[in-house]
Image (cartoon, rainbow, N blue to C red; front, side):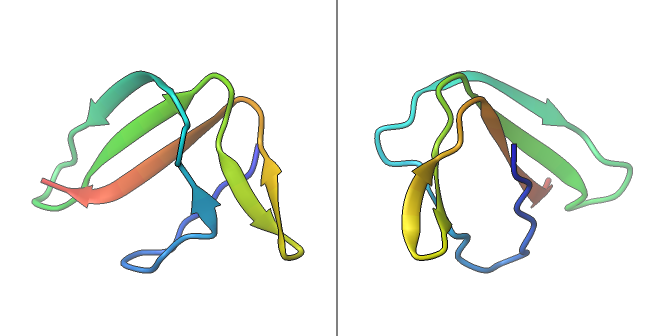
Length: 66
């Protein structure tokens, strides 16, 4: 499973047609330090060497959430 962390930048992943199986939220200690986590049983697609590749089981984390 790949991890993509790029604040405020378009990530090389596609969530089109992906099904979210679970969502969680981790509150942070400070404003804008929480994380929204989306879980995908069948994964999403990642741009790898100019090809959209299925990831399998995966999660996407959005940080900077208040």
